[in-house]
Length: 257
Length: 244
Image (cartoon, rainbow over all chains, first blue to last red; front, side, top):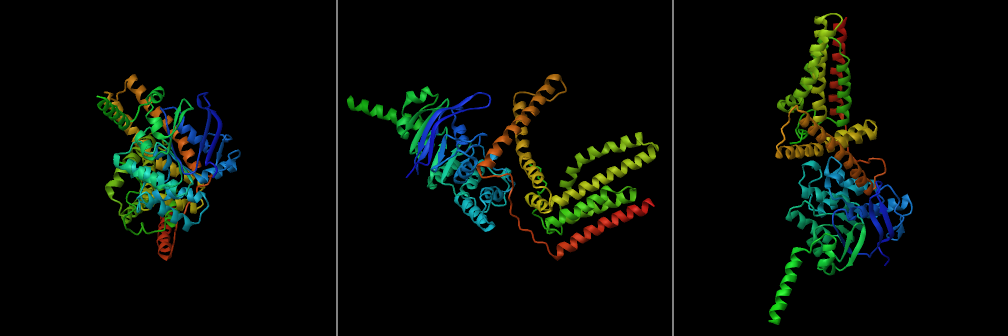
């Protein structure tokens, strides 16, 4: 099966001259969960916005689900099939009720009222928020807002999901809930995160971004146990792996004694 | 605490059950009739009628009175300025000022049950059905939705200032700090608009806000709406009679 996302030679600078992405090349296969790690300003969010043509440009370097995004109709089609969950739920929940917000995407997809109602019900059920239809977004907790944001994207039945810091500002229970939802979604996922434990739990592949370039791309353990690589990018090995490696060191020392 | 206009939209009353489209239409007619009142009898009658809408709505008086504070502060200057500037002298000026004051109160007392007895999103959908331009309604919706985010950010920044020992004073430094606070809130709001627009585009937005809302008006709505229109007509008639 052809790759889900292909990016070739992507270079992007912001209007003020800031180089955000530099000669980026990436292939994402169907069913992968690719986790992007990197320090603040590495280009993770910019990459996701660029893929969906949200930075006032046409993303010529990007092919999504076999369709090169060389014109606006192709970008519109990509937005129908690829869902983006924003880092801050308040940026994404712009309607005055949960129902209206979750229905926003399906309505834009041209579905009938019955189909929209069905999509909204199923999406809210999937995120465990049945009965929240009439609730007002600014009354919700952070975790609930995050789940409504996910529901709003699920309701569009995307084939690919892009998630920007999905566990940020969540308590352990909310975080666990989001991880469960990520695992339940069977499509291709691209996740940008500082949460390395999340990467260990869900990633099939980790990509390290630094200053707009891909510094490493491989299996999660290979990247996340490479202390020198992480340090060079201003990152640290996850605590659990540090303990694990310390334990291994101690055990091998014991054996040689 | 968020000051939602529709906090009591869940109550039961003759106004709560009135179809939102009918409600907005007939109360708008009443507001126009109130605005056109010129005499003291008409002003007093408008205030009495507006108060009766409020009582019918069962919205707590305390909630309403708290919201009237700002309105009274806004209208009170007319009671001072007009007596001092009216060409006919202070007595006609005071009368004119009192009419403006009472009419203003009557209009606000009408708007509170007009929008306070229906969930806000339903009121906005009713406006769309009444052919108010969709873009204007969308702007109002967004302004309302993000008013609370703005209030939360303002509260957080005020707390951050207090935590570092800031005390509001009329000194140059304090005013400069408050000015920076306001400026920063505006800049953050502006940056947020960009992100919100990206979120809308990402979910297929194409310059039209589609919406579903089931409205069903029947005979009870026609009767109630007719009664409010009759009240508006009586108000206009009484005002004309007085002026003769």
